[in-house]
Figure: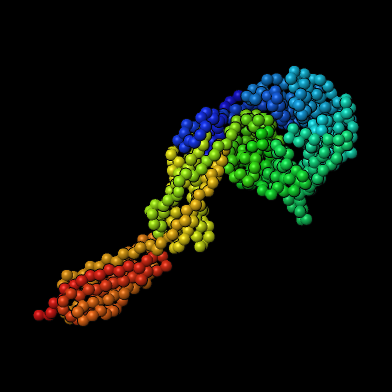
Length: 576
């Protein structure tokens, strides 16, 4: 076994929570001890099923070799160590655990075997109608064993399959059958519900998903759904199914559509779906945590694209998922179909990975956080500088506090600016060690703007309630600077130079400035001054009176810049 530490790829680093002191802690609080993804190489070249027995802390795994020779169920403990095996007469395939975890049912070519999970001994066998190498699926629902069987010796995935009930040491037909290797799911969440799905094969263009009520003496079929539209698009490509802890939802790993979330009552789409898997990832497995807090979504993806997402089971909770990208010869490259399972308390996630050829397999034991803690923004937001100016950098400052353990990687907050032009998402920023942060923006519009700052949470902290700040964005100021001679002569040419500058966006081209002259004869308007591209301008005049003459230059402003004025006084003397 090895311990793998290098593939976790989100800000929400995988941690095993050591709760210690409760109460409020800032980001600088001591980090929790990082958990390890423990990995064991499996002694199999094919894979069929995994069962997690939380009562005895055992993980059972079977292969899919479809051999008539004696086989084994591999047995591991919750630390990822192999602790034994269960011998079967022929190659095992499907498995199911009784509701009380006392018995493990294992299918082989001659029927269904029973094993005592306490003593790990074989206790019985129900003989099937046919002795065929095609693998069987097994489920335990309504206090009974169920299995599917294709009466064929080859092309197992494309033959007609039938659903049977184990009756003592024999079997009884249910009458339910269809094309392809029908797959079964059951679980302690809804002990009387049996889920059946039809894989997509060459002969099945629009596969179904359905449920059965197994509580009575007769199996009663519930809702059925096929997913293709009238044009034949969107058909189900079934890889795995999981039922939520409360039994209200059914999640489906669909290689064509990603992770579907359905209402268990009628198999309609749940009101809020999960976010899409990363681009390039194809759904292969799905599992709800037994405590109802998390869901694991497995995928097949190349390179650094995530193969596993661990996130809140509630799809409305948009806390950043924990992502794993499996990418090596010592750990596998992707999650195998039906390769995910949780312990009942949600403290451990078990994942089976495989390589690109599907002939090597690994068991990963992952310990996600056992709890999430609150977060909040404290105090009011403020701006730097105090007055927001269009076209000028603006900092939105605040502070975030986190309860419980601090993340081991920086926390990020994001913000959205709302103004007359709509919403604009700003770049996320990292909070400092004390929780303070500054979101940067450059307002592009004069007038009222509202900034909404968010923390969407991470795997150990719940999202914070958004905080807002209303800001009045002013026009950018401008400045006029004049250079004038100290003295002039009445009736002779006089030149004043100057420069117009502005903050924010560049000043528009073609600006003209108003010019007024005030002397002892009164105030008059002179010819306007044109501003060059570099902001400079010249004013030429023939003073009409001696004495103090004041020249006043003005810029009226524009949509983004405020106006400005400047004055210069020249002492004019008589000629001669």
